[in-house]
Every structure is written in C-alpha cells, then in structure tokens.
Length: 371
Ligand SMILES: [Zn+2]
Image (cartoon, rainbow, N blue to C red):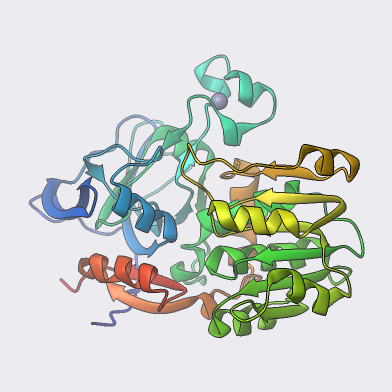
C-alpha cells in the first residue's frame, strides 16, 4: 500500500495531452475494470473537475456486490464521494466557476426551477424525493464531469486553507444532517444510535451540533474501536452489544429499557426489528440504514397505536443539507481526522472496498496515483 498525499494546487490544473484517463467502471457484481476513457468536455453549464480526493463508503461496497443500485447506471463510471479542483468551465457557468477553484460536491441534484415546472415532490418541498433526481458517479477517476444541475445547486467552493480530505465527506455528512434535521428530538430526550460505523458517527456529530448537550445519546455497536470514537465524538454512553442485549444496554444507560428516538444505521431487517423494540412511548424509529427493497418486517400495529410510536424512514439529502455540510466541514466542526483511518492510491480501489467489508477501516480515502 502506498500513502500519497494531496498535492498543493496552484492555478488551473493541466489536462494530459491525450485527453484520456484511467477510470474505474463498474460492469456488474464484483466486476470493476480500470479502463482508458476520454476525459469529457464540459457542455453548457457544466464543469470538469480534477478529483483530488475520493472516499469509499458502504454504499459503494453494496453496489459493488449487487452490481446494481438506483444511483448508478451499469456499466458506468463508479464512485460518488469526491472533492477536487475545477479544470474547465462550460459555456454559461463562467459567472460562478473558474478553473483552479477548489470544490466540494454532492452526488445528485434535484430538478431546477429554471428548467420549467418543478416536479411534484420538489414543489412539495421534498427535493430528496425529486421525481427526476440526477445522480452523478465517476469519483474513482482522475477527472469528473459535473453536470449543469449539480453545478447549479450542489457544488460548493472550498477556501484555499481547507484540506480537501475534510470536505470529501460532503455527501455522507449531508445525509446525516438531513436525518437529524427531520427527526423529532426534544430537550432531554434519550437517542439511540444503533450502529457506530462511519454513518452512525456522522449522525452523532450532527445530533450534538444541532441539539447541544441537552440530550442523552447512546451509541450501540459490536466493535470497541468504533465505540471509543463514538464516545470521543459526544456519545453519553457507548456500549458493546456483543455480550448483552441492546435492551439491557439501554436499560443500563438510562434506567429504562427504551428511548425516545432510535436511529437504525445498519440497514438490515433484524436490526430494524431490534431497534423498533427499543422505542418507548411517543417515540420514533428512524430507519436510516438502507435495506434492499422486498424485505418485510411484521409490526404490532396495536402497540404502535397505543404508544404513538412512529416509523420515519429518511433517505438522502437536500441542497440545504449539502450547503450546511460544506459549512460545518470547512469550519472544522466535524472531526474527520478520527474517521479517516486509511489513505490509498486510486488504483487500490478493490483493496479499499475489501476493507469496508472487513470493517478494518472507518473511512478510506483514495488519492491520485503518482504520475
Ligand atoms: Zn424534482
């Protein structure tokens, strides 16, 4: 394994004379190929950026194993978390973007008012449910084309003094902010973060930023290494559920076997069932971890009714959350140094995906291969 570092940026990056690059393409389940492809030219409203740092997340691992996902066209360019430097700017985007500018981006954009009528969900104020949402992939490559929609609403400038590996987490942290913004946490509540992997830790940070100290946060996981980070990032209690039940863990933490808000961050049916059993009177199960469609969970509707227990799934992010994510990341309000546990060269993508599966890393960032 190599440990390259992000090279300092001065002015506009130069493109290779061949105008070609080696990019990761996903062809199907466990079928990634590094291919020689043309570097795209930005059209009207678009920009081309150099990827200075990319990040590998659990979704990438899922997509790699399944060979399909709503966010990606297969075969196609792979990777959705990145930060970089603008190389070229398409017609009409010059007013806002210039070559040499450092940027952070989300991985999607909802429809835009200037394109005519917004879709019904965007009109309802639910852009995370946009009916024509545009996903953007291609972070595991030296250059990425930023489409017009993304360049309009979900691309943000990054100050020169901010390391780009800090803002590479714009997309996942925006998801955490979106969830925390919408979940009903009241002063003095007990909140369970069920799963202290990277997303659980982002949620923990987002909870503390939004609600301060007037809240008990209980992090549950089976890895002590992750629980130590959870504690350092603001969990009131960080408990290992390898040997005790989650119910006993919550009882030990707050003196009762349930909590007001329980966030399922693992994305499995069994953990949803267990998380739901931890929700007390008037409480909410936040279904944050994505489960593949088609899997079902029987629920006691009478119990839900007489205890007013809500199940609130929360997916993705909105432009408001993306902007706030960049602001907090730039301001140093997210301890990303605790989350980045490996740095590899882009060509070591398969190793990085395996590390996600083995849980030997919290977050691995990928840096450009030495030229
Ligand atoms: Zn829309």
